Length: 109
Image (cartoon, rainbow, N blue to C red; front, side, top):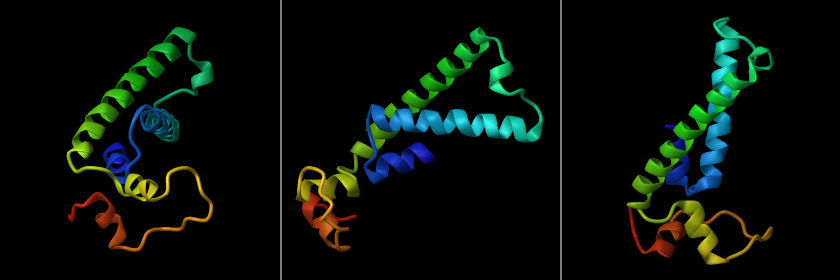
């Protein structure tokens, strides 16, 4: 759900999938350690750490690719529509008015 929400909001691509993977790794470790079913990662053998990170990375990036593809069906996300108004990073550009985000993309939801 988190990655699909990110994609719908306009956070798409490998960078967003990397962020999601970090959240996935962190939440997994917090839950395992809080419930007492896991050991801290620094006590694991390096080979087990590598396998864990690899598996969760594959999960994160495949999930991201699917979420991005499904979100692309709806067109650009609100962040992407906002960025289209004035390309580049600008500190003087505030949030869009409610109706303006849909007007830029030409679509109404």
